[in-house]
Amino acid sequence: MIPSPPASRSREEPDGRRVRRLHFDVEARPFLVLFELTRACELACAHCRADAVRSPDPGELDTAEVTAVLDDLASLGAPRPIVVLTGGDPLRRADLTRLVRHATRSGLRVAISPAGTPRASAARFDALRQAGAGTVSLSIDGQSAAAHDAFRRVAGSFVWTVDAVRAARSVGLRVQVNTTVSRETVLELPGICRLVAELGASLWSVFFLVPVGRGRDLGALSADETEDVLAFLAKVSHVVPLKTTEAPHYRRIASGAPLAGSTSPPGPLYHELLRRLEALRVAPLDPRAREPRWRSPLAVGDGRGVVFVSHVGDVSPSGFLPLVVGNVREEPLTAIYAQAPLLAALRDPDRLSGRCGRCELRAVCGGSRAQAWARSGDPLGEDPSCSYDPGVAVRVLQGDGAPA
Image 1 (cartoon, rainbow, N blue to C red):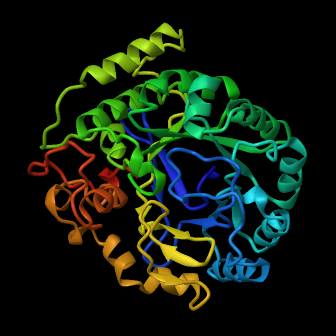
Image 2 (image 1 turned 180 degrees about the vertical axis):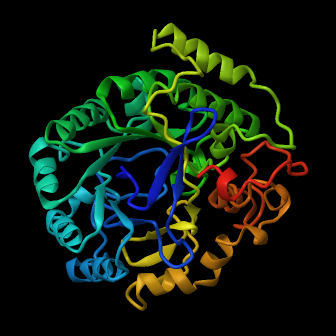
């Protein structure tokens, strides 16, 4: 869903990979604002962190309150944050096109994250594009209608979503496909990878389940299984451009940086995913390929460049880390982001504990703060979804040597 960052640069490293570096002061301003306009949604997805409901909350922010937040963000000047209008289903908001137009005229870059329903039509997308939206993200969690619809818990969702991807592209919008990885969906990844490539999506965003909201009833992967999936994703990143959410240790794998710590070699899940992908006759997986679609990860995360605003104005580090640090009805979002003690702590890698606190990549990875909180109650604790055992750094992975 995210347009190319307005404040990042790319250069070629000696090994031929492109490394993007973020030139954006995340101490002072957010890079990415996830703005939940409503929790109303016709779907009943198994993993929904928002516990979305059928009807809008009468207490959700109204048009004037939303535009006030957008104006506050625009007042930061260039480079301004990217704003993702999400939900629930933001298409349930009658004022969505008006909000997009207001945001883009203020100089903000806007993306939309709708649900895969019949509301996601070419006509609606064209109106949003003309209002200034550049990107739409839609979720696909299975390679078939049976698998996807079971996860989304509404028959027809798969067809609606695929049609929506095509409709968005037909009117000139970029499309990001989101996929949630859990025990229930992990073996669908090879087929989804092929589908994402066939649909011509600009980016595949792979979300690793955080056990919050309805996601508490699903099965999260173990640390070793997560490592296998990340290795698989690094392998297929030459087939389709991708990024991860709530698995920032993908930066360790994607960077290829020499480290003194230890991990296990790829395990059975990695080999099974690769076998399934090869059986689908996807493009050759040559690790030496220098495709222009390679995207190195950006070093941003929950509270560190990323901030979330709920439908009632509560501000949190992210939707998956719902610790409220303020409310935009009481204080400007820009002030909350800069001053909230929890957000400041999340931006300080020296505040991390456990393996994350010892890790030589803590300044560019830092682990998933949402995974740490969901499983231990400590947002600054070690990320239990990462299997890396830090050692003594063989070189300082900051400055010119840091993956960005």
